[in-house]
Length: 442
Image (cartoon, rainbow, N blue to C red; front, side, top):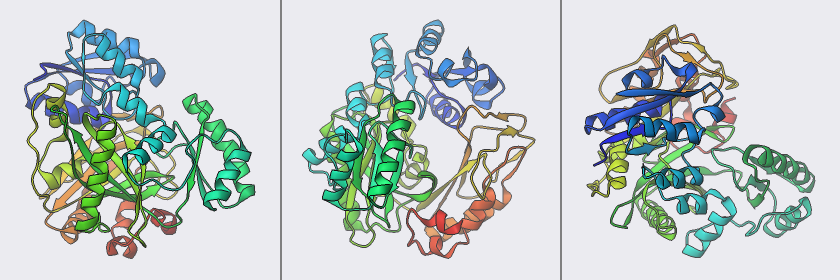
């Protein structure tokens, strides 16, 4: 087993990784920007190194500074968490080239799945269902229109190098496509340094369902189960549950088999997620993308399977066996507690003056903040994840209502009132909802 671990991240996920590493007897090293000096993850690590100012490019995305911290502290391995450098193939290669253990998939797998067009073509070749769309980048608005006319409007315009819901737009007709193509192309060049654009069929009513996979040290790829991720604002997730209310046992097995094919196609190792679009009318599902890292919403899979996915990551990276979980049990729900207003979801950073977490049977809080900490404008607005487990969905929702009511936050804005509303929403309660649910609530 790895003996010392540098966590190249911050906030909630850094605390989450440190907690498991400490339980396993692994020495932990936190790296942090100067503005994060008083954050809980810095205090909880065995050692902490400041690596730069608030700007992520000079700190949490600063490869040289992170590697220097690893060298100075004698770290044996690096865990990237999610976001920042977690899906950066160059970083993964550089970590290994410096004689360190990379806790994640190989750089080749990250590269293969990082480009949406390449990933789509790989999946089609492997027999994984893909939505009708372009096999090559649309080099111009005219090329995009030709593809759209072949597969039919409406279409989704995507940045090939995008992820996390960024660089996406819907075009209903030719005029809309010309406009959205230029917007996505320009955004992708600015954000990702790659202006390549993919055109795919857009499904007006669709569910976002993903499958957790593990690429084991012995070369096998296994799929655990699915997570429902359709509660979204601006294509970014707000709440997730497992299992999905829309997935039957037969469909679950088909989705798991496709996810295993996806992982095997790129020789996947460690934890990853195969994201799909599910047509609730026909039961058809299509590959969306693969996240070559640990997902924000991994705790709900942990709860229904009785597994610690961070521990699994560390064991795989150490070349050790992982005990494969048996049959899933119960139901789990995760609510992302963000520093944002609950109506329009605009960021609302600030110093935390009150922070009281709920407790009780089936309640888990993975938080990055505490009273006195400051939510900075420089980083993602996620403050905590409120995770609820129970015997069934009804019990989980009842426990979630109480936990949302008991969670007290003051200082930064927060979206707890939105979740109180969601947990009373008839469409959500029915389980028959799709990615448009938040728009209909607003």
